[in-house]
Image: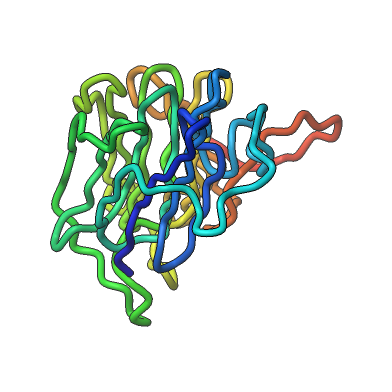
Length: 240
């Protein structure tokens, strides 16, 4: 589904405070507070728990809502927007391309755009756009498309640093709605769960994109991982 980004503010707002996402619309409501706004750099926020560290939020809005600062039409997809500093990243399908765009969160002005050819077609008619929310970490943007196109881009410029075509490289089995797990960075490893045949959970070096390990026993999942320290040991076949 296609969507729309709206950024609104009141006289005492500087940057966004509340992020609302639905299948047909994407709304950013901004706050012009003197406080620095908290980042929302990945799926479910900075700690992947849906909780924002933002402070100084307003308690009410005018009856007609805050005035619109800017708006932008966007393409297909279920990927959520992410924010770090003044950079807003959106990941969407525009015609036959998956597109990563970096916008100024305050003005909506485009800073850079990265795109690659996209051939994914949903067998159930649920849309052909990205399912996974990008990740901003260590000065990079990591995206994972529905066909397993994993990219690492430079946050400042959008320059491609490395990429993998996971479906081809790991002979992944077809899934119902494409690949939809959102990447996570843990101990300088980019982790994605893409399932068999040659995949499972895959860990890539953040800087080089080289595979560090894989856990083949894990099937594909649309659940995005969260980091936890466990006392129990889990045994699973793996290879370098």
